[in-house]
Image 1 (tube, rainbow, N blue to C red):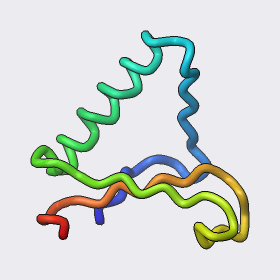
Image 2 (image 1 turned 45 degrees about the vertical axis):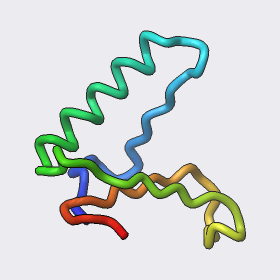
Image 3 (image 1 turned 120 degrees about the vertical axis):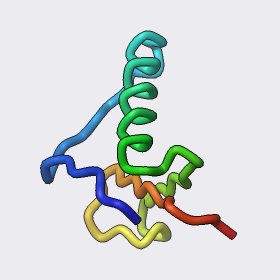
Image 4 (image 1 turned 90 degrees about the horizontal axis):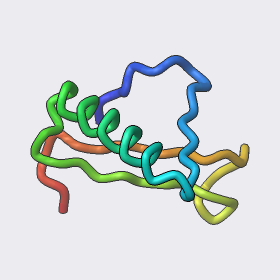
Length: 70
């Protein structure tokens, strides 16, 4: 897994009602993944809630890539 290199506590919130903002964030993420060498693809894992193994509740995304996923 490669780190995004973002400052601790950095959050991106996308308002579902604003398609323009979604597109901007999508492309920023796309280019960051490409920069990290994940241009062949990556998996996004979301942990949410107690059964998602969270003890502090916030939206957490993991970007996993760099190899073939099984």
